[in-house]
Amino acid sequence: MTPENNQQRPPQENTPGKAVQALKTVTSTAQKIQRRPLIAHLIRATERFNDRMGNQFGAAITYFSFLSMIPILMVSFAAAGFILAWHPTLLQDIFDKILMNVSDPTLAGTLKSTINTAVQQRTTVGLVGLLIALYSGINWMGNLREAIRAQSRDVWERTPQDQEKIWIKYFRDFVSLIGLLVALIVTLSITSVAGSAQQMIISALYLDSIEWLKPAWRGIGLAISVFANYLLFFWIFWRLPRHRPRKKALIRGTLIAAIGFEIIKIVMTYTLPALVKSPSGAAFGSVLGLMAFFYFFARLTLFCAAWIATAQYKDDPRMPGKTHT
Image 1: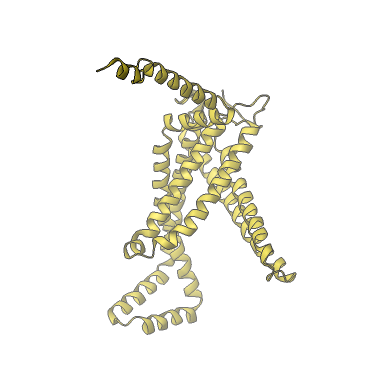
Image 2 (image 1 turned 90 degrees about the vertical axis):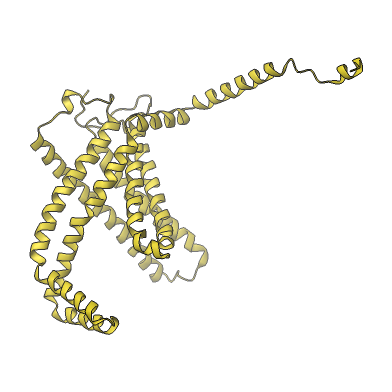
């Protein structure tokens, strides 16, 4: 090898130094990004969510949510039985449609027998369903409360102030369950009434044919739905934790939860119809979709609880109410 070839080869002794310098630059840039308030807050919330078993709590809430659907279905069947018992003509119409649309006589007889049993045993099924729904609902609320408190406490372990007698716990969960149902009814009422009033206003003003107004009306409906979600999550984050959250943190965390919940509803609205088109989806799609909805709702709720608990704002007072330290 000639000296000229040696001189033409690129020097390699500075390559490790360049790699170290590049690594230092990347590390410095990452540290600068992590020091930004929003990114730092997101990292703190994610660490708390993972450290305090947010995924496991989310799975547990999903299980109890799905289990609570069984007594609700029992109450629904009982209500349908009362309606059919009060309207014999409606019951006869259903029997006639079964005979017209079901070609198999055995299957038609089985359906008629099932409907008759539901009508005859409506009181028993309704009472049993109500009792089971009350018990499962209280336990569901207790699990949701404990999961949110785990994210909201300053320390992972329970403090002596967090311990309470079992009858006080069940009574508190019962009151919270009633409050949640009232908040849910108010939320659904706001959404439905606002949607109906919006449609009435559009029809009264003859604005149906104006195409460029349709995105604006959709935006108004979306804003109303997010506002209704906000009221629901505000009640959850303000009422369930024992430690009262910071005011600004509660407002911002609730807004994130409301927007995220609306995104979940939109995604589920578009994905569920496509999911049930296949034969396997028709059999299991609704069940899987319901479980996915509960799971995403639980994870969103717990992550926003961690977000509220890890917020650091200057001169941000706590919400009024009893606070344990």
